Length: 351
Ligand SMILES: Nc1ncnc2c1ncn2[C@@H]1O[C@H](COP(=O)(O)OP(=O)(O)OP(=O)(O)O)[C@@H](O)[C@H]1O
Ligand SMILES: [Mg+2]
Image (cartoon, rainbow, N blue to C red; front, side, top):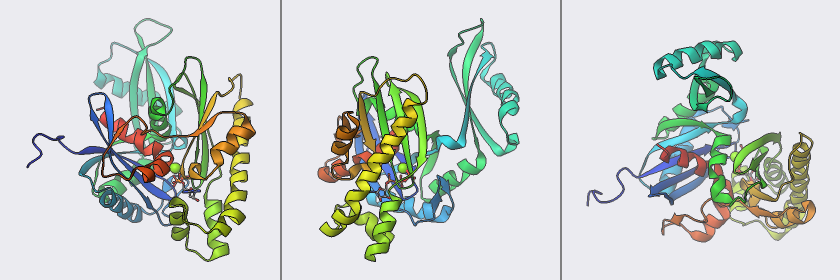
């Protein structure tokens, strides 16, 4: 068999390079339906990625290579993201008579005016959104710029890990793309997705499936991992592994994990207060939890009760067909931490 009748080139890989681990999701598409082919979560050494920046390209490359092996599928192309905080975006009206080529030149002239770095240190991308509200013959163009020093280490780590990096996306766009898979939005409802990772907690708010608010705060599971590591003499990797497999002793659960859950709830509540105080925004009708800490037992229930908002775990795979090789109960546990990687794989399949 040479795969002539199968899928042509394997699946598309989304790579979420977080501060504690690399999450890999391989998706294929059949008609309009996505299929989960394979996934992997592989821990990173503690200082390889700090604040979303890759400090050690070789370590990240080795971790990506391992993730590809663990996932075990046939994969070649990957999409990764830079954090939204590293990106400058601007919507500018541009003449719609420019050819693509002329537009590119003109964009560089415009970009030079508001990007605080020399243009040769910056990667620039743009997308024509559609006709501008004011003025004939004008299109609104979305300009996205990012320093090359944020993009290049990602590309290098991915190629070092044996994959071909086709697109570098922005992480909030990836989450936005998964939203229709998480929640069937009734018109005019406002829904939040909170990601609680190792180092950051991010609240994204969607109205009619469109991202209207996003804010990051420095808080995450690192505090929990480090406390267990220090008090119980386990290595950081052992702690992360035990958390992921729900393999901690009852004592640790009661003495450390449970109190930490309340701290998480307070931090989520704080992020909502920032949202409500940021302007005339609607109340949230539902909240979804993503990221590693979302898997903490009882967290969603505690939040539903304390916040009075229906809270559930984010699972982008609930409607997908899933490769039978994948362990379903494991996937259920891991799904909330795979949201970003899933949105990145979807970007790759958009073509
Ligand atoms: N039950 C649990 N299972 C797995 N991880 C858990 C659990 N409870 C808490 N955690 C925490 O989740 C964190 C990992 O989350 P995640 O994989 O989303 O982080 P990350 O994406 O690497 O980090 P960041 O997004 O902040 O850069 C670990 O620090 C761990 O302490
Ligand atoms: Mg993360």
